[in-house]
Every structure is written in C-alpha cells, then in structure tokens.
Length: 449
Ligand SMILES: Cc1cc2nc3c(=O)[nH]c(=O)nc-3n(C[C@H](O)[C@H](O)[C@H](O)COP(=O)(O)OP(=O)(O)OC[C@H]3O[C@@H](n4cnc5c(N)ncnc54)[C@H](O)[C@@H]3O)c2cc1C
Image: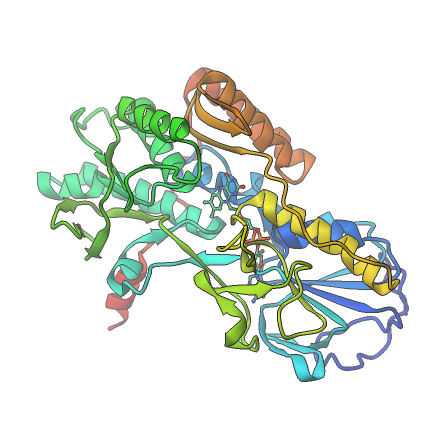
C-alpha cells in the first residue's frame, strides 16, 4: 500500500509499536516539537534523502508573540495557529505524528511517546519552554501563564467572566478585585499584555460597561529588577515606561510577588493588591522528555550543547531553540530565548545534518542578532536595530510588518492584517465572546475536594 501524499511504500512497523510508519531505508530524523526551531529544521530537510518524522503534542504550530492579542480579544485564536499537516503538504519525506514524547532511551535510539515507541537515527529536541513559577505553588494554582493558545483563551475567558461578574455584584471591594489586573514580568510579553489591557480599558470598557465608574480596572505591572525590557537598550526601557504610564498602567519595579491567594497579591516588600486576575509572564524553564542525563542540564532547565548543537555526551541527539544552551565565554547563559535564535538554529542544524551525512566539514553555529522590537499599544513601540534605536510610530509600523510577515499561512496573515486595519481605525477588539466557563486551577481543585 502507498501513502498517497508521501509516496513512500508502507509496511508493518519495524520498531514502532502502535505508531504506524512507512518502512524506509533512509536515515530517520525524529524531531520533537514543531515550534519556530522545529519547523525551520523541517523546511531545510524537506524533500531530501532522509525520512523526517515530526512529533508534537499539538497538531498545530503557534505564533507565541501574538498570544497576548488573543488573550485581550484582539485576534481570533485560529489566526495565530497553523496545522502541521497543512505546513508539510507536498513534502515527500516528512511525516507528522500527533503524540507527546515522554522518554528518550538513547541506548537503543528509541523514543517512547504516549502512543507508542519509535526508532531514530538522529534525534532533535525542539521542545521549547514552559512557564516557570519558581516553586510558588500558590501563585501557580491561582494565576494564569501565557505560553500557549489555551493559556491565552483562559486569560480571555477569565477576564470577560470577571468583568461580567463585576457588573452583577453590588460589593465594591469584590468589584474592584474582579476588575483589577496584575501582570508579573516586565519583559516583552508582560509589557505588551499590560499595554493591550490598558487599551481595552480605554476604548472598550466605557462602551461595553457604561455602568462602571471611570476609576475601575486598575492595571499593575510588577518587575523584579529596576527596569522594563532589560534585554533591550536604556532608551527602549525608558520609552516603554513612559508609554505605560501615559496609558495609566501602574508600574512597580524592584518588586516581586511572594504570594497570591486568588484575590490578594502580596509582594516581597509587603504591599498587597486586590486582584482576581493575575497573569504570570515572569519566567520560563525548559521542558523535555526524561532520559537526558542531568549533568547536561544547565540553568533554566536548558540542555547544554556543543557549538554544533549536539547534546553533550550523545552522538546523535541535538537540541535547538529555547531548550538549547550553547555555553561559551561569549554566551555564558546560552543564546537569547527568542524566535530568531530558534529559527537560525533550526536552519543551521538542517544544513549541518545534511553535511554530516555526507561526511563534509561543518562550522560552529553563529547567531546573528537582527535586533529587538516590542510594542505597548497603537503607534507605541520600541526598536533596537544595531546602533539604530528608536521609538514611536515607525517602530510600531516596523513591529506590525515584521510580525505580520512572520505568521505562518497566507490566510492567517490576511486575517491578522484585516483585524489590525479595522482596529486601527475603530479601536475595536471584537472577539469578546465567552464560549466556555473557565475556572482557574485552584477553584477546580477546591470543587473536586
Ligand atoms: C507570550 C510570548 C511572547 C513572545 N514574544 C516574542 C517576541 O515578540 N519575539 C521573539 O523573538 N520571541 C518571542 N517569544 C519567544 C519565542 O516565542 C520563543 O523563543 C520561541 O517560540 C522558541 O521556539 P522553539 O521552537 O524553541 O519552542 P516553541 O515555539 O515553544 O515550540 C515547542 C514545541 O514543542 C512541542 N512540545 C513540547 N514538548 C513536547 C513533547 N514532550 N512531545 C511533543 N511535543 C512537544 C510544543 O507543543 C511546541 O509546539 C515569546 C514567547 C511568549 C511565550
């Protein structure tokens, strides 16, 4: 029997039990994770003389930089995700399998997934990161992270539900708690989220909830060190602070959250803030299946690799993207965990694997920093492009173009572009529908008790 799309002879599975794969004599490259890094690698290896199997626990790629726009009702969720099967249409040597990889057994070149086992010749870990609550269980169970599309939808639902509940209650303290937002983490995700919420408060709240007093919905942004966007220039940090202040966001620097019970946020310096909405963007940690020797795991739960992205201690296992850390004197903490680094590593490893298979010489990975952009709201953004550092309308325009062009899929680009154009003129965020009843983790636990 033939696989219609891939034109590869299908037979009984060799080592793969339960996961049916076509038999092939070509070298088998297994990629775990179809994020920016994994997909860049797939693009390099497509239609080459090897068999590529992409595993992901979701059947779609997601564009994380715009998660905050889904969370704040500006975009539909399906405009920033893209099905893997559509992505690999026409790639003769690439297969996708929807499964979560649970374990790596390097002694037998096998991975164990929740659907069965698969053999590999080369294994690539491109599994990215997950939210890091730094061991604060209370904070984790009452707050919301923003790492994937489900998180964004949870935030959107919690926000809209709480705004509706605030209209029902006559208790002023309860109403304040329901409408106040605390965002933790002054990196790009936190800053962009705070700006988007402030615009929601400015343009949507007075129209949708005319019954609320204008003082309602306080937005706090908490950052542990003394500046926002610490990886960008001083100009970017100070302009971002100005933009947020103009939008009436209360920025607390040199402050960190120590506890949260679902209603009251407590900070290390002893401040308390009443808020039933806490969004945590303060940290990430690497996530990967078990089986990698702990001695190769470094700060941030990242996997230490050599300059060719090969995991130390293994001959045929590589890591790329947020999970990989090339530790050198120049990069003592590894490369930045951003999309550009992930994409460049994916492309580099594609070329490197092809060379390795032909016994050709390979060069070490070199990261080319193309600059950083962050936006705080309409016409408000900051840009660091080498020695050019600017803020305002042109930075915002550049941010919009770069993000629009980076989204997977023509239809998605069209949808996002259309939504942005409408909202540019109307200030509209039209996805304000509650389609399911969302409950934070802690309240689900309490109901089960
Ligand atoms: C809210 C937010 C905003 C951001 N904004 C920006 C920005 O503006 N600019 C920028 O450059 N970067 C930004 N980033 C960072 C950027 O998104 C990451 O650096 C990038 O996604 C890393 O790519 P990756 O391929 O390493 O991992 P990811 O994109 O996280 O992909 C990992 C993939 O692995 C899959 N996976 C994980 N574990 C398993 C498993 N065990 N089995 C099967 N599949 C698995 C996941 O489902 C996922 O598809 C942002 C990140 C977030 C969260």
